[in-house]
Image (cartoon, rainbow over all chains, first blue to last red; front, side, top):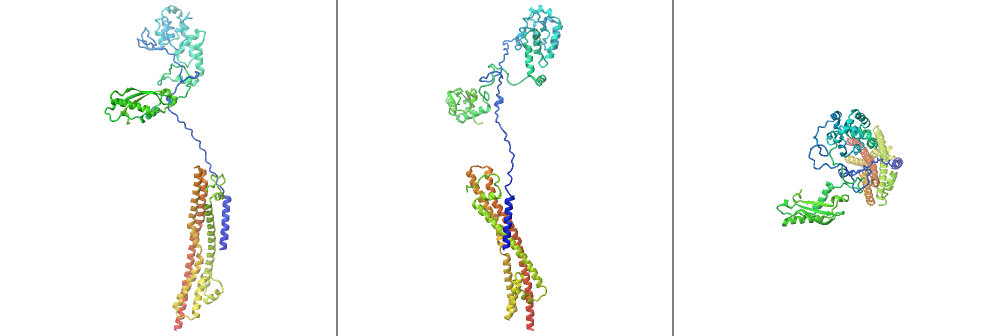
Length: 355
Length: 237
């Protein structure tokens, strides 16, 4: 027994000693750090209720684009057509190439053009032209537009001057520089501008083309050339407000989103005990108008705008609606859209209660 | 129990560190299991040696016994020695035979039964020595895993109590306690597996030895009964 015991003890000592030496702590597992994905919750209002501002304008309460200067369309127009105002002559087909030929053949008709030009909003330049107009001729040739052609008759005083202008060659040299210099811009503004440049010492039009072109990269120009689609859809980029860089407050838009509207509806519905057991539920529609403070409290007394009635049931419905509105206040609504929910109109319709 | 070092610093997960971190009960369980393992191996080694010796002795005795030597001579040669195994069985039978004849036994049948009984006793005595302590192996084989499991359960229990106290479910807090507790089960299995295997082998060997002894006893009894018959035939004649 002794041999067995001693050998066993020796063996165990050896095994444990070996274990202590060689079986040290296992290497800590290397776990690759997984970077957390940052997730933003973006509400759709930031996109749907986006507001345009102007970069170099000061901050105002609301963002607003540059005010439009478009003149109002003549309110009492009598004729159909594309013009901004009623004209005497008849509507003519839109043919660009032939016009140039016409102007050449019949110079007397062309000269009066200066008149329509001042009426068009964008180029202010045409106005100065007639004044220096010892020779209004240069303008005649470049204008391929139907509009300007249509107008000749109203201006009859200048017909006398026309014969001098008549020589066509003068018009052509002017056109060439245009095509060379400004290829990107559309033909219409160019033709209007080029004559100005030649005649007026002040080079405003030249500056314009110069300022627009260098800013645009070639890609933009190519895109502009390729893009023959007319801008469509969306609201007009038009405002009557002063141009502003952006709002002073960050707003999620100026109107309540559908989800916020739903939230408000739910807040009110919780407190509403519609009059039950009434035969004609359709007649119980009540519209309540209320004014809220920025904290969501009701300001003043909610007013029943429509619905209800003088009979008992109608009055009960109106009362229940008004009570609901009062009991549920204060309302939890986005504070930055206070403008949108300052005045709230709530429609209470018992027939749509159980949806 | 709360003094268990939670979230042990790195490099503290070695066997010794795990043992030292364990609570008192778990430590006791581990120490007991290690001692059981030591004793198991001691028994195994001892039995292996003893059984090998017994087997060799049997081989030698059988060689001598079947060499045609007279039984008287063999008896006289073995009388001085301390005998074991087959020799002891042979001596028990011969002693009974001698005693019976010295006192002039009458009935050969009663002598035959006496001799058989003496031999059975001798076999039982021999096998007792061979099979002693095998029961301990069986106990370790079946009990050690449970003891280790007990240590593990206690260890995990205490470590969970400590975790509840630390108010953190970080794995770094949970892991050391569990690892330390599992060490107890590991040691239990370490003791139990060799014990079970050795028990199966040794008990098989022991039953083989006992079968061999019984076979020899039967043969020797047959020889003796033949002699008795011859004697009774002589006496009758």
